[in-house]
Amino acid sequence: MMALYVSGKWPRTPIIRMVGTLFGAVSWAQVAWLITEGTVLKSGVASTGMPVYALLAVANLFSIFRAAFDARYHSS
Image (cartoon, rainbow, N blue to C red; front, side, top):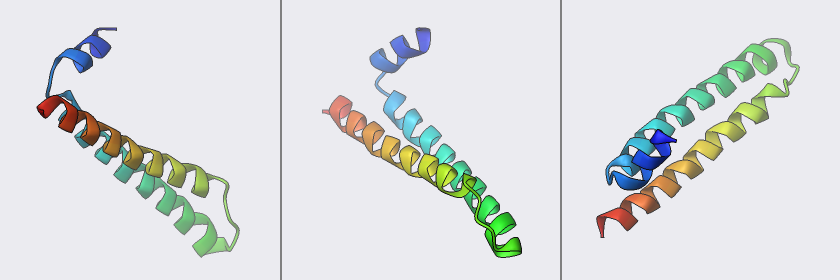
């Protein structure tokens, strides 16, 4: 609850959220690539983890846009 309070009251939290979600997007994209490299490229069999982790990376990219909107909202 304290994190939600700080996120709503402190004007720098959208920038912190953007940095955090960028780190998350890069991490999930790396996991998706490593699963792809370990399954499709080595054995030719697709894993269900590839689209799941790629979708998590895309969702984090969407979160970056949401945090950027909040940053513009708080700065004006």
